[in-house]
Image (cartoon, rainbow, N blue to C red):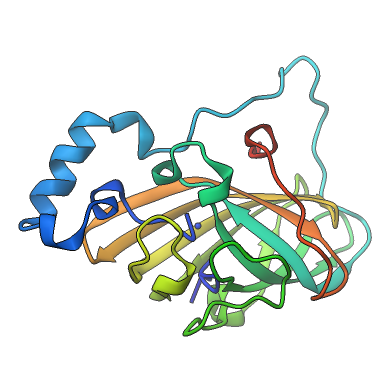
Length: 228
């Protein structure tokens, strides 16, 4: 994020479940979060998502052709969305991939969070900011299509939070990408939340190239959220 999101980089990155109760009920937010974590430990990590049988998956390679667009739709389903794609964190993303001789290449990535329940990429969240990952420095894409990117501090406004409507502040965020083509991009996200409570959110992010900021947004199912 430095990507997230809807600028970061992710569920807009939806807040932790303690925040789902009225604010007046959180007399001790940290204790509430601890109690909630004990009760629903499985919900905070990467959700249980469909996987591809290793026997069916072939080798993965970075694309040979470069691509660049400001019109990628990014949806991140973190653990606190509890497997509900309608509570995913949603962004418009800019991706610039340049191949290198011998395989792999470089990646420049940035995004901005969308408002709750958007219908188009132009539905930006009020108060949101565009963030460049790696402070706009290119990341190395390995020959197998993997790339590691980070954001410094990022803020998700309450207008982009479909779970509680509260603003979220992250001290840092990591995106581990897997890129095979402009139509086959995903990333695993880990965000370090520092406000309104301290904790970590994680989950897969998927991307779709729409080609226009006014194109209708696709509807994702739980089975769509997976990343090698």
